[in-house]
Image (cartoon, rainbow, N blue to C red):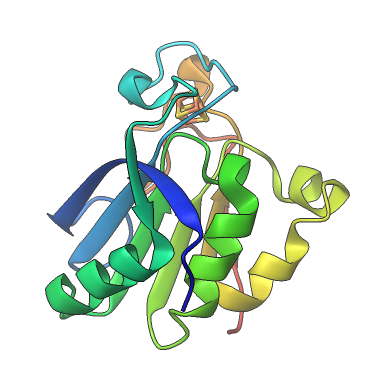
Length: 151
Ligand code: SF4
């Protein structure tokens, strides 16, 4: 458990569009990618929005997520990498999807790849409005890729 703080924009308990099945979605606050026509502009500001400890968030997840499906979105979750890693290390029995505006290769270059051990799926890449995807489930634009990992 940890008292490390995480900055959250919003939490949705019953999404069916952010990965397979019924999922709890944690939208993290802060993004610096500035994708044109971003679907979630209220997440951009780099300021404290809803600060909670990892302990509090884990408690909330355990009390509210009966399907054990969690999606981390944003915002850019990797702007809070230490907190994100700390959170996911404690959710080993959960099915985890993570969205990021970085590409998988950029995360490797940033030395953020340890997290791949703790997630099932990474959807990577910035949102490109001219490549907007209407037919492919779970991605925003066709440049984004779905990467599967073994936990
Ligand atoms: S990475 Fe996501 S949240 Fe950030 S600007 Fe792009 S679409 Fe919006």
